[in-house]
Length: 470
Image 1 (cartoon, one colour):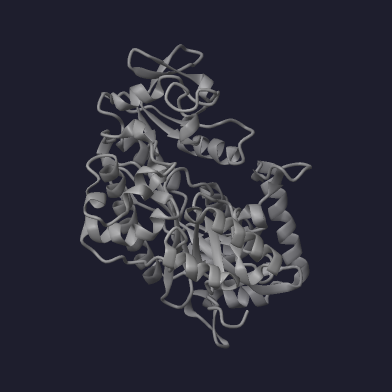
Image 2 (cartoon, one colour):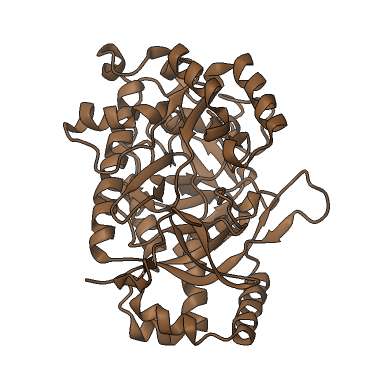
């Protein structure tokens, strides 16, 4: 792991944020560690914290690996991250309002028109419509990597339905249950107010026609969805109904929920289904997951959909390269957290550079996710590299490339003991009447030795993320 920034150690000395964890780590004998790991797995299994991986045969429901060694940020480090994340969320939402309106950023030549208007995530059904409070993306998941003591970069944005917040909350619950002494000895900022903050955010963007306390629901595709546990978990913590498309119907310009006491009007829908399935009368006619007529009610101000249909155009990996330009254009500021250097294969000069340096780069599909559809050059065989070369040549605009980042590492409990493993961070920024985020996020860890891919579908795990109180 030489050459990578280790977040716990500065040479042989322990960095200040981890000072109180050093003795804890040293006093953890192997048998106790294995005992605690088994305890954690049993608890996760009992309460049903699984994710689904399809297409590989066997039981698709798996436990997400949980690592007991927490990741720690100082209050000052978090303060910078928080300012940068909020800045980015403001710029992304300004961009969405703009491109579904007058598209001034395109008119000014700051973003190519084809990247926006020919993007498969651009929804013409919402052109000219401004959602309540001018917010399209209500939950922005910003993936951040660290490469040095003060060096942070945004790897990508998630503006539609970023998942994983249940793992952030349950990882904290697990650590507090298993190691209460750590929380007595360290002043750690809480994350358990997230459900309350999420409900407050959703209620704050109730539609114009709502003249009472808003009724909020979570719309799920159902229990076969890989994130269903999270949908039910959040509904329970927020005290709102978890519904499927068949539970809702449209009548008289409003959306109604079927209940045992008769129809109840719904004002805000936190949807966890893709745009294409929201309304079969507007998008895919074969969708059995959505609500017929929902988009008509949405555009007439009878209901708010969070995040808004069409928000996905802002988290396209080609659009990502222009987010710093959005910050300058809409906010008149310089980005607090920079992007990772990115080459767009759809541009001739960038394509030449990428093809000439494939063994050293990470290449991603523009619309890919979950660690799929990507090439990690230094970790790939010659055959894999050549196969990807042909894919890029066949459709250059479908790919972007980035340098192989020296992702920071944190100590991680592995079979042989304790070893450094690469991590990233996904904080969850809530955007409504105001912008807020809890101090922490989902730290994902690449459990395989030397791996830079942290996604759970690719063998990654999760850690509790601490922000120390100032």
